[in-house]
Length: 288
Image (cartoon, rainbow, N blue to C red; front, side):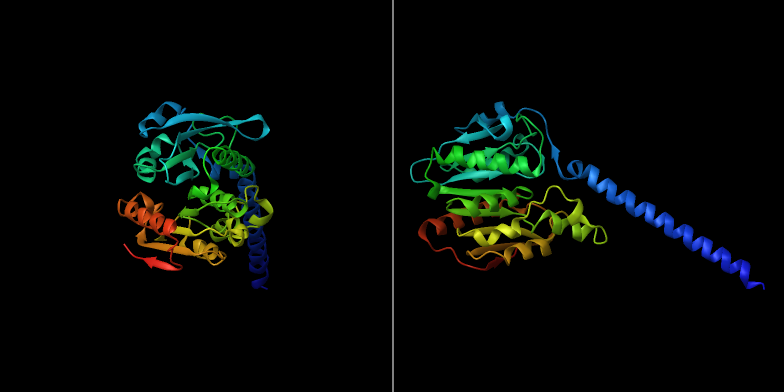
């Protein structure tokens, strides 16, 4: 007799809690579906054209892209016999905020084409997965008219690593550099929201893992053991998909985009030298 009101109360409480949890779950799914572009992309809008001059010998160019849009890029022709780096940056900030990094990558003699994605500094339109695909295709086509594809090294940073893998999977390149890569946006979303049907909600797949088996050029990877943005484990999934030679440089500790560390300028130079001589090793690992 005394337990009946308590049972009814308990059932009512459980039902209310279940309804609240369901509402929160649906709200989370709706939030991820509606605002995922704002979650993924953080463009810096200021025009970067004038700052191209701070890369020695550099200038700004505008490259036609898909759907009538155009992108700004920093261009420096290579010295005779040197590689040209096609640089595809990450999901935030501008080329101007990467000036030190780009100068390090270009070095004294290498050519450089650094892309400002659609919706980023000076480029028209808005960022999206499809826009990034069109922009990277346009940049490679523009570059291949000016240098030999066999001298092009595609360098992807964070979100840009997916596009670097895509470019290398369908075009002739000398090599691929991936700084803080990941398997796919779906993999990242699943690791962060394992109980949400992210595969049904995701509009920006950035699926590098599905394209990795088609890459035939050697690959240099730099990644952090504890990376809160592109987890080490996700990068490992990607690396397992490559059939080409992979040099894997691992940094212990918490970090993201480790190539910014000065020591990796020497690592990059050594890898390029090995690339030229055909001595790129497979499965190398380093600690720093």
